[in-house]
Image (cartoon, rainbow, N blue to C red; front, side, top):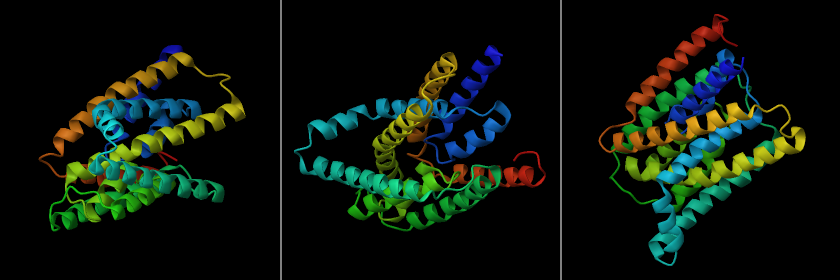
Amino acid sequence: MADHSLLSAFLLGVIEGITEFLPISSTGHLIIAEQWLGQRSDTFNIVIQAGAILAVTIIYWRRLMDLALGWREPKNFQYAAKLMLAFLITAVLGLIVKKMGFELPENASPIAWALVIGGIWMIVAEWAAAKRPQSTEITWLVAVLVGIAQVIAGVFPGTSRSASTIFIAMLAGTGNRAAATEFAFLVGIPTMYAASGYQLLKTVNENGFAGEDWASLGVAFVTSTVVAFIAVKWLLSYIQTNRFTVFAIYRIILGIALLGMAYSGIIA
């Protein structure tokens, strides 16, 4: 049983690491995977997400240090201010959404639809962004819309935080894939740390750590960190010369397959 638990933790760590920052929805993949690998605790889900965030923090540590130490430079100050604005919008709207209790059931059908619709949206958005002048500038409008997009992605499992933020940035004026992706990922660092910290405190206050499998948590955390590091490094290289089309097609195919399995009763 222990071996099975460690294997499941490893597989879920791999899934989280690959999907958290690729525009294909980590939440959607994990919810589906748990139907075969078993439901995991809230603490487990927080830990594997923390591993993915740590990986991206390591990748961007030079950029983060540059922004922190060079904040007196107008360019760095404005960029950091836009990151903070996007984060604050997400935090405030996210708390409002939480208080309202507005979220979809975490089962296959709505996730599948979000994957399909999101895939189509990605194709249309990249086509539209390609017609705009190429720009690496992050405007205040981009910051506001990215903040809102993060909340929307949190409400609708399967949407993908990275997909919604990258493509709204591209459509709102940052036509450059690399610039849009960097801003989306940098905003995601404080956002996901804050969300994970909030969720962890809530979980500890309600249930503590009773019954947690620490070995599985450790395996999942390390696996998620290593795999996410590799996946994000690959993505950043890939988008230099390629569009996101392959991810959009994957989402549409996966979403249709999940809809078929859901309607046939194979998955819930």
